[in-house]
Image (cartoon, rainbow, N blue to C red; front, side):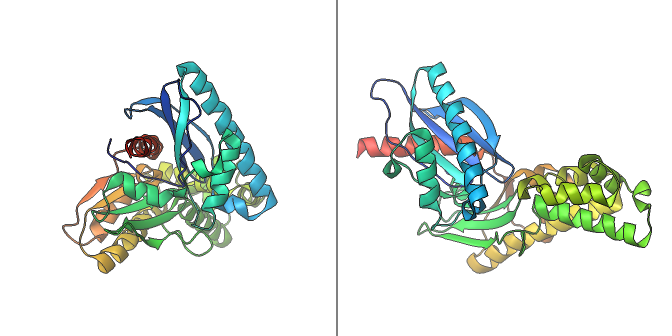
Length: 329
């Protein structure tokens, strides 16, 4: 079985049963949601679902760690119910988790192993973008631009080393991601209100945003925004996309996102030379203007494709491939 990689931290688990059919769990965890999939030893998708988002940022304080633990317990319950339905056993897990570096990976590995009742040394972990790169290309073949809540471009080179551009987080950058799009839109709407109170009544963008936050008063925006998680704030990008065909400002913001994402790709093209590019993440599903602007901003002739394999499915298949290699060794 060809190994498949993609999307956010990665985990692999030792056998739980020697008699039940082998099953493999894949996770694609972002700031907004964690998608999971269960596949059999042949890589066929059996079940999939989603739970709340998971991020490496959750490891930075007690509140975040508690949220992480709760989400992993929910995941374990769902995976356990699937296992019972198919009368099999999960023997391998691979997950991609956003916002995770090499120092945090062992902590997340241990957290997942504990939630699933597995030993830590049976779990492997990696970042979401590294998983995305392996899902899209063999090492050295191409670049991935990932845009979800945040944004990053990356490349696994011929030596298996991860090269990256961006992915610095919302405080520093993450331009082109959903969180960035939401912040740009809110900034424009409230600057317009500063200059002309009541401008929101003539702005489809403002009206779409205010539907989500619960009203047009500053108190509504303030309460919603400053009580929202990073991933929740990023969902306001959907409102920007909904207004883009009517509101020039919304369209400009989405075009700017496309240009920013192209900038990430150009950085890797400059450093490592011409190679094909794969686009991954839900930002590219928001509106055609984002991809169109990216294509117009890239060097002419750069091959571009959408990453065709869902990260959570690729992760489950990768777990199966790893187990097969181990068994044949």
